[in-house]
Length: 186
Image (cartoon, rainbow, N blue to C red; front, side):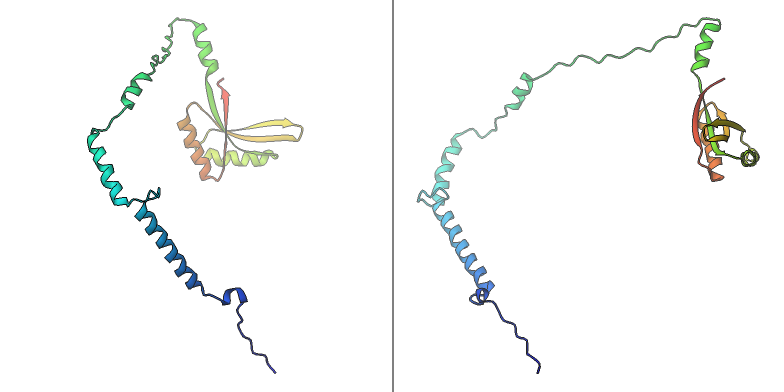
């Protein structure tokens, strides 16, 4: 035999429906608001309309123009700021001779792009040939460390960034992500 399932309400909610509580709450709240508006929030026992009429009379006696004190406060709190110190550009004295040319040449930097590095010299030479056909100034440099000998494919040197950017674009077309190296000019 099959049992018939029935919905049984719990004893606590069976007494009064939810809409009844909602309706009762609205009535009590509305009556409270009515009393507060009728007798005033302070509960002085006078109607709110009488208070408004009495309060309006003294307001007419006061000046109708607003009073702004912050203008005077701003003048009192004014701070004087000294003018900024501006560094004047240094003037270079033009003297003839090797003494002046040596510092400017030693401080000059050139950019070199490292396209790739290989353990095998044949792979480095193969990439050097491909990049030379792409009209780039390429050389292979060998370096030894504790892990062995590495053959680096270097493009450059470039004396300004715009030429270096063009070479990077050519290397990107060959699917290479070069490293930018800064070295002093020789």
